[in-house]
Amino acid sequence: MLYLARGIEDRSFWVVQEFDGTLVETPWRIEWERNGYRLSHADSNDVSQLVAELGLFDSPEQAVERLRAVLG
Image (cartoon, rainbow, N blue to C red):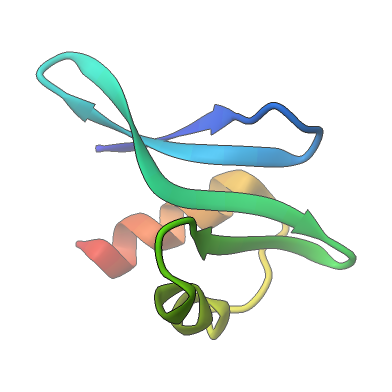
């Protein structure tokens, strides 16, 4: 299961995954842009470009929900 974790900066979030009862950091990030939140992948610019096609989200929670749906 994927969860939202607050990042160090305002309006910056990490996506973490539960593994054996422990939350583990993933390479997924959610950051505020001028008109909403955007998903990105810290380890791959190519993956970041692909998920950029999902557009902007009104909230970081919506971004995580969409990521869950895409990843299955």
